[in-house]
Image (cartoon, rainbow, N blue to C red):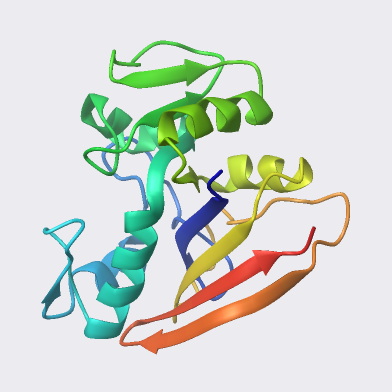
Length: 196
Protein backbone atom coordinates (compact mmCIF):
# COMPACT_ATOMS: atom_id res chain seq x y z
CA UNK A 1 0.00 0.00 0.00
CA UNK A 2 1.34 3.43 -0.92
CA UNK A 3 2.00 6.31 1.44
CA UNK A 4 -0.17 9.36 2.04
CA UNK A 5 1.72 12.64 1.81
CA UNK A 6 1.36 16.32 1.12
CA UNK A 7 3.87 18.41 -0.84
CA UNK A 8 3.09 22.11 -0.99
CA UNK A 9 5.01 25.31 -1.55
CA UNK A 10 4.94 27.36 1.65
CA UNK A 11 6.27 30.73 2.78
CA UNK A 12 8.59 30.98 5.78
CA UNK A 13 5.65 32.33 7.79
CA UNK A 14 3.56 29.27 6.90
CA UNK A 15 1.21 30.37 4.10
CA UNK A 16 0.33 28.29 1.02
CA UNK A 17 -1.40 31.21 -0.71
CA UNK A 18 -1.16 34.94 -0.48
CA UNK A 19 -4.09 37.19 0.30
CA UNK A 20 -7.35 36.93 -1.68
CA UNK A 21 -7.06 33.51 -3.37
CA UNK A 22 -9.96 32.81 -5.73
CA UNK A 23 -10.85 31.09 -8.98
CA UNK A 24 -8.34 32.07 -11.64
CA UNK A 25 -5.98 33.42 -8.96
CA UNK A 26 -5.51 30.39 -6.72
CA UNK A 27 -2.44 31.83 -5.01
CA UNK A 28 -3.94 35.31 -4.53
CA UNK A 29 -1.02 37.73 -4.26
CA UNK A 30 1.33 34.84 -3.39
CA UNK A 31 2.39 33.83 -6.90
CA UNK A 32 6.04 34.01 -5.88
CA UNK A 33 5.50 30.67 -4.10
CA UNK A 34 5.63 29.01 -7.53
CA UNK A 35 8.53 30.96 -9.07
CA UNK A 36 10.93 28.06 -8.49
CA UNK A 37 8.87 25.93 -10.93
CA UNK A 38 9.96 28.18 -13.79
CA UNK A 39 13.27 29.81 -12.77
CA UNK A 40 15.66 27.04 -13.80
CA UNK A 41 17.07 25.40 -16.89
CA UNK A 42 16.19 21.77 -16.12
CA UNK A 43 12.93 20.57 -17.66
CA UNK A 44 10.77 18.35 -15.44
CA UNK A 45 10.44 14.81 -16.74
CA UNK A 46 6.98 14.53 -15.13
CA UNK A 47 5.50 17.95 -16.02
CA UNK A 48 7.43 19.25 -19.05
CA UNK A 49 6.07 22.79 -18.66
CA UNK A 50 8.18 23.22 -15.51
CA UNK A 51 11.79 24.39 -15.85
CA UNK A 52 13.45 24.10 -12.46
CA UNK A 53 16.94 24.25 -11.04
CA UNK A 54 18.70 20.87 -11.17
CA UNK A 55 18.22 20.15 -7.41
CA UNK A 56 14.55 21.18 -7.54
CA UNK A 57 13.92 19.08 -10.67
CA UNK A 58 15.33 16.01 -8.92
CA UNK A 59 13.08 16.54 -5.87
CA UNK A 60 9.99 17.52 -7.85
CA UNK A 61 10.20 14.62 -10.31
CA UNK A 62 10.79 12.11 -7.52
CA UNK A 63 7.75 13.38 -5.58
CA UNK A 64 5.45 13.78 -8.60
CA UNK A 65 6.47 10.35 -9.90
CA UNK A 66 5.17 8.73 -6.71
CA UNK A 67 1.59 9.93 -7.23
CA UNK A 68 -1.13 7.43 -7.97
CA UNK A 69 -4.01 9.75 -6.98
CA UNK A 70 -4.57 13.18 -5.41
CA UNK A 71 -7.19 14.31 -2.91
CA UNK A 72 -8.25 17.95 -2.94
CA UNK A 73 -10.61 19.99 -0.82
CA UNK A 74 -13.38 22.23 -2.12
CA UNK A 75 -11.48 25.54 -1.85
CA UNK A 76 -8.42 24.21 -3.67
CA UNK A 77 -10.72 22.71 -6.31
CA UNK A 78 -12.53 25.99 -6.91
CA UNK A 79 -9.45 28.22 -6.72
CA UNK A 80 -7.75 25.98 -9.30
CA UNK A 81 -10.68 26.34 -11.73
CA UNK A 82 -11.68 22.70 -11.03
CA UNK A 83 -8.40 21.59 -12.66
CA UNK A 84 -10.10 21.92 -16.04
CA UNK A 85 -12.21 18.85 -15.29
CA UNK A 86 -9.10 16.70 -14.78
CA UNK A 87 -6.25 16.70 -12.31
CA UNK A 88 -3.13 18.76 -11.55
CA UNK A 89 -1.14 15.78 -12.90
CA UNK A 90 -2.48 14.62 -16.27
CA UNK A 91 -2.74 10.87 -15.71
CA UNK A 92 -3.33 10.93 -11.96
CA UNK A 93 -6.94 10.52 -10.75
CA UNK A 94 -8.42 13.31 -8.63
CA UNK A 95 -10.68 12.76 -5.62
CA UNK A 96 -12.65 15.79 -4.39
CA UNK A 97 -13.69 15.90 -0.75
CA UNK A 98 -16.78 18.12 -0.67
CA UNK A 99 -20.47 18.23 0.16
CA UNK A 100 -21.20 19.84 -3.22
CA UNK A 101 -21.12 17.98 -6.54
CA UNK A 102 -21.38 21.02 -8.83
CA UNK A 103 -18.46 21.28 -11.21
CA UNK A 104 -17.26 17.68 -10.79
CA UNK A 105 -16.48 16.00 -14.12
CA UNK A 106 -16.79 12.34 -15.05
CA UNK A 107 -12.98 12.11 -14.75
CA UNK A 108 -13.11 13.19 -11.10
CA UNK A 109 -14.39 11.30 -8.05
CA UNK A 110 -16.55 13.03 -5.45
CA UNK A 111 -16.49 11.86 -1.82
CA UNK A 112 -18.85 13.51 0.68
CA UNK A 113 -18.35 11.32 3.77
CA UNK A 114 -15.07 12.58 5.25
CA UNK A 115 -11.31 12.49 4.95
CA UNK A 116 -10.88 8.78 5.74
CA UNK A 117 -13.28 7.80 2.95
CA UNK A 118 -11.65 10.24 0.50
CA UNK A 119 -8.21 8.76 1.19
CA UNK A 120 -9.62 5.23 0.92
CA UNK A 121 -11.14 6.07 -2.49
CA UNK A 122 -7.83 7.60 -3.62
CA UNK A 123 -5.88 4.51 -2.45
CA UNK A 124 -8.14 2.33 -4.56
CA UNK A 125 -7.58 4.55 -7.62
CA UNK A 126 -3.82 4.80 -6.96
CA UNK A 127 -3.14 1.13 -7.68
CA UNK A 128 -0.50 0.76 -4.96
CA UNK A 129 1.17 4.11 -5.63
CA UNK A 130 1.13 7.04 -3.20
CA UNK A 131 -1.74 9.42 -2.49
CA UNK A 132 -1.07 13.16 -2.46
CA UNK A 133 -3.09 15.65 -0.41
CA UNK A 134 -3.66 19.21 -1.67
CA UNK A 135 -4.90 21.93 0.67
CA UNK A 136 -4.16 23.04 4.20
CA UNK A 137 -7.53 22.31 5.81
CA UNK A 138 -7.71 18.85 4.34
CA UNK A 139 -4.12 18.07 5.34
CA UNK A 140 -4.92 19.18 8.89
CA UNK A 141 -7.96 16.87 9.00
CA UNK A 142 -5.87 13.97 7.70
CA UNK A 143 -3.21 14.67 10.35
CA UNK A 144 -5.89 14.69 13.07
CA UNK A 145 -7.07 11.29 11.81
CA UNK A 146 -3.54 9.87 11.81
CA UNK A 147 -3.62 9.26 8.04
CA UNK A 148 -0.52 11.21 6.89
CA UNK A 149 2.84 9.48 6.45
CA UNK A 150 4.97 12.33 5.09
CA UNK A 151 4.97 16.12 4.91
CA UNK A 152 7.00 17.77 2.16
CA UNK A 153 7.44 21.52 2.43
CA UNK A 154 8.87 23.41 -0.51
CA UNK A 155 9.81 26.40 1.65
CA UNK A 156 10.17 29.66 -0.28
CA UNK A 157 12.23 32.43 1.37
CA UNK A 158 9.48 35.02 1.69
CA UNK A 159 7.19 36.29 4.45
CA UNK A 160 3.77 36.71 2.85
CA UNK A 161 2.19 38.17 5.98
CA UNK A 162 -1.23 36.69 5.20
CA UNK A 163 -3.15 34.18 3.13
CA UNK A 164 -4.18 30.59 3.78
CA UNK A 165 -2.01 28.78 6.31
CA UNK A 166 -0.52 25.38 5.53
CA UNK A 167 -1.64 24.00 8.88
CA UNK A 168 -4.67 24.80 10.98
CA UNK A 169 -5.10 24.17 14.69
CA UNK A 170 -4.32 20.62 15.81
CA UNK A 171 -5.60 19.05 19.05
CA UNK A 172 -2.12 17.81 20.02
CA UNK A 173 1.53 17.92 19.04
CA UNK A 174 2.59 15.82 16.06
CA UNK A 175 6.23 14.80 16.00
CA UNK A 176 8.14 14.81 12.73
CA UNK A 177 11.48 13.34 11.67
CA UNK A 178 13.48 15.22 9.06
CA UNK A 179 14.37 12.76 6.27
CA UNK A 180 15.82 15.13 3.69
CA UNK A 181 16.67 18.82 3.27
CA UNK A 182 17.65 20.02 -0.20
CA UNK A 183 18.63 23.66 -0.66
CA UNK A 184 17.96 25.02 -4.14
CA UNK A 185 17.72 28.45 -5.76
CA UNK A 186 14.60 30.17 -4.45
CA UNK A 187 13.39 27.21 -2.34
CA UNK A 188 14.44 24.66 0.27
CA UNK A 189 12.84 21.23 -0.01
CA UNK A 190 12.11 19.67 3.40
CA UNK A 191 10.79 16.11 3.69
CA UNK A 192 9.50 14.88 7.06
CA UNK A 193 8.11 11.54 8.22
CA UNK A 194 5.16 11.79 10.59
CA UNK A 195 5.75 9.88 13.83
CA UNK A 196 3.03 7.29 14.41
